[in-house]
Image (cartoon, rainbow, N blue to C red):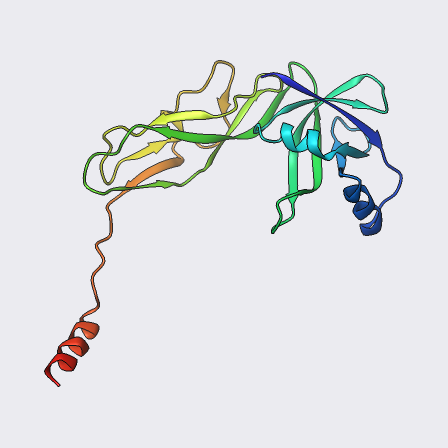
Length: 198
């Protein structure tokens, strides 16, 4: 996984008013946690951060106040529920070689067997443990030819080398459901027949 370089500045102003001022300047308030150090409050460039976060579990080479880079991954991201812009980000400090637990998006490929079956994503993201600089962007699962009643468990998914499951092996990730036929309730049919007779 490639690193995305972002320059950040430490911030000393806190509270809603300060956060609004930061966002007005197209920046995002954030906090860097990890390795037993005190949380570091940061101001990050909004556009650069937004572009970086398009990649799930992106590895960020963070340059703080022009000093040496720290490696970090997104821990939680708050967005405006209506407009979608970034409101706040929590980052987790990581070191090369260190294992971290993250959730990796699950993508599917292939077609279900004919019959109008429905594919249910029980888990949209698979919890895994991976080396901080080698976090997979996603995992892909084939659903080719699966029929109702079929399910794919966490242990059925092929993971990249060095990545292990961080969830029970028998956890259901995907399952195939029979399509529900839409039928009018009997009461409604009776009312329609009475209306036709009147």
